[in-house]
Image 1 (cartoon, protein in one colour):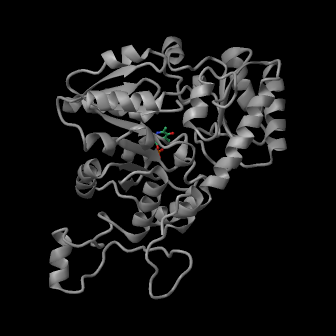
Image 2 (spheres, rainbow, N blue to C red):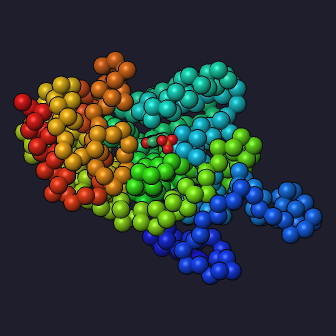
Length: 393
Ligand SMILES: *Cc1c(COP(=O)(O)O)cnc(C)c1O
């Protein structure tokens, strides 16, 4: 039975129990399912009845995972995919055709940029970027007669700038375009884009949903009408999620709320702590009153998220020294793990961009991004403090 509360749905939404009366859902590692008789097989293939045929189409573990996600995001339907990027690609390619145009926010995950600026032009799908700090009027002017979709992420990575989802939802409605929000950073626990008018909500479940850095997965969630198109495309092109990964993820969702509470609580405390450090020139965190969009963050997010960014004095060189000095914190490009992770975008993920291009997406030379883990806060703070100290020598 569905609940009005997030935690209950995340734990209790469960696939039908088998004749073995298991308490925890078993793993259905099977590529196909058997038919009772010829009539049932015919009806299943004709979509007259619901049921499993082949794991590329559906599987009990995958169905459970996606059903939970729909409850948590407040969407009508959804499709699970093998990775977050499969979800991003599928959510666009299934709903766009040659001649269509996409308006996207410039602050996007790197591979999403590649889809828009390298892959789609080969198929006649064009795009325009809008900057997160451009005015509402500028955004609206960039919607062309052939614009079919708006694609955004909020908060942005790594700058942690926000997009006003209520305004964007209204704009998409007025212009009759599909609003697609990549909600990976915030997770459905912190914000629900569909509530503000997003027609499609995409996820990399690899990050906070999984939460322990083990498996990859993604999801495309949205209205019945749009997901019908997405399902057709997925069924015949095959980006399906493995039942094993779906089983891991459905278990992970059971603890998403408690994990996010701790990620966010520690992240806020790290941000407050860093604001007092004389070697730090800027700290950015959506729930710090000093964040330029603090009021918007309070309006559309439940907590500030697990990511904190800060600028250490000394620019690029200091950034590198900081990373080399870390004793416990992992130097990795992932995020949303039990382990605290730090990266220096200017010398790693965004090193191929020019200074101007980096500045346009909010990446300054000494910017450090911390994905707050679940270790004891004292240990995280001690490691950050000593690495900052070392970066100044
Ligand atoms: C990681 C990430 C993706 C890609 O997800 P994968 O599971 O790695 O394919 C897409 N969008 C955002 C915002 C991400 O952080």
